[in-house]
Length: 88
Image (cartoon, rainbow, N blue to C red; front, side, top):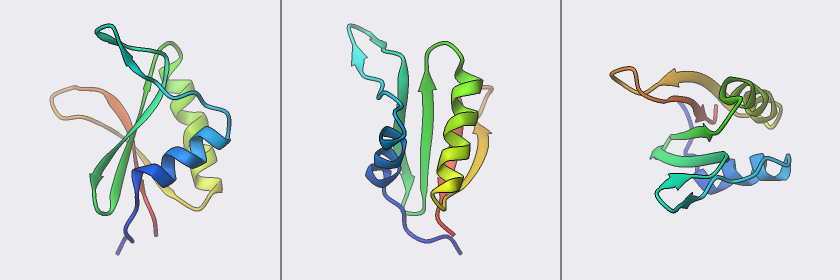
């Protein structure tokens, strides 16, 4: 069973690798990544901006190197692509 995980911990790993955070500004998201707590055992990572697929692939590799389990997923109904991050 997956262990508890915090969005802040995942965010710290990604920012330490040099990826910029996305911020909501003037009705839209700036390019970069953002994280959201999906429950006590899951964190979601989104990327805003051009090159979304490439950026998510790069973040996937970096999180796996840090010991996280990462799966690509998509929100229901054909929504946003995201990463589902857990700790083994």
